[in-house]
Length: 183
Ligand SMILES: [Zn+2]
Image (tube, rainbow, N blue to C red; front, side):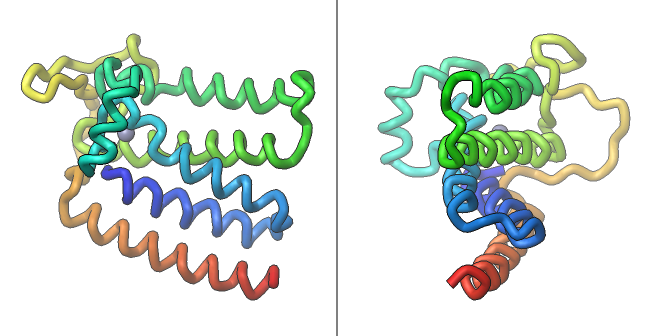
């Protein structure tokens, strides 16, 4: 999915979670900020992120772009490392709500990104470099070999467009409810 779709999905899910769990506002704000950046962080490997001249320019400074798209950045290894980091934070002396919620939001959102990508045609190789996939030289990418074939969405296709608009709608309703709840 495109960066804007990932962002919309993360905000829709996280704001819904905040509503349902009655998360305090002081902790919810860093959670949302972390979630925002986590939603497109996996695609810093030069994936769908460069949608403007500015991001293309900034991308030149980005060393992660030399990792082939949807390989190491799109694995459960990274999610596991983030979860580990989250649980190590108190020992590292960072037990305040700000930092912990930033990492928590980032981690959940990172995982949501991988789940969404998994349902695209290319799929996600969860345990790269292990597992079944094949190299596609045309797109310089690794395509997951699937055991079962059912319907998968096409990146930037119609399904993604409607999905994104639905996420934005849910997000707006959630933020409206949260605003009324908090202020
Ligand atoms: Zn991705």
